[in-house]
Image (cartoon, rainbow over all chains, first blue to last red; front, side):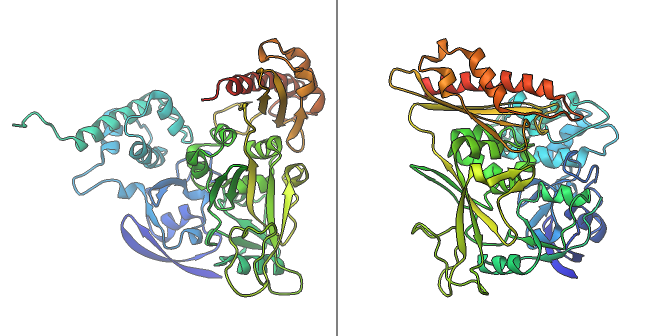
Length: 166
Length: 311
């Protein structure tokens, strides 16, 4: 039996007909064509499939699409704004926090929520925050650097340069 | 992999959920952070999945003087943020990763009853309980009259006779590895975690191969001091070293003395006598036995220190 569901994905209402067993990760990739969300282990370990559900990072491979009918989903495709890449994305680029890029969508979603909740995380808070995301290429040094750099970029964005204040 | 096919149900209220669970052989889906991996790995293939995420009134986290009642849909991250119980907070930091805790539920972890999971040990060491609801016998469930006068969480207002509710104490709730006392047709609606007595401290220590993995062994401890700051009571619950959380009362081994002069070797020996770890690919039984003693001493010392110097 199939279920008619509506997901608000990156601000747009999208409808899909899915069987109960359809994982949110597969619904996004196959039913909605949003292949930015990657699928690694499919049992919640690798973190590649992390998306934001009503703003909170969750494993889309451990979520049934029908369960989140009517909810808001942000995928990596929704992180960039009209002015281009988000501060977190720019920091990952600047710090070379990726090599093959497979894990990157999950890191970007996780870090976006991490810095929203904790705009200036300490080193151990960064490590804890990204502890559920695996990268098999780079090691984590540059990823950790990128999180701190993203925090700086976000802080600058919130407090536009006061140099020209009267 | 992908979950095997099943019939999906999304009841809108508790009565509908209990009717469904009485009528079909269904697996309850709440946070899904244990169930969906089992489905994806095809270790479980239920004919029916009953998704309780839309049931109203089950997300509560209510702290009273006697303890904390956590509803079936309260996410682990929400319970940690609520800061309602020191030992729950200490344990939740060790449960998987932050992202998993955004979906995973406290009650779901109890019902899943993994012998290496932290939350069952917390319930066990505190002597808490789980509230199970089922449809009243003889047909479609009627009025909601939970026992004990207070309305059961998720009770449907008005109308017919309510669900049958029973409260199962932790020592009877954990029946075996991945086996709780919840019977077919029953839904765990909440769990109760008793508050720590005055002059008490708690701690949770565990060792895992990788951050966020299930622990090779873990120990949570609650220590209560008397007015002279001598150890009046000390209990531990150990995970990963038996089919269910193993509770050991080590008050006697501690003797009624200050933590600084407790004969820790004797206490550790008492904990080791209480557990029966097994070999598996992750660690030998002997190593787990060693670990559980080391972790018990650390947890008990830390709990005693917190009891002496409350934050």
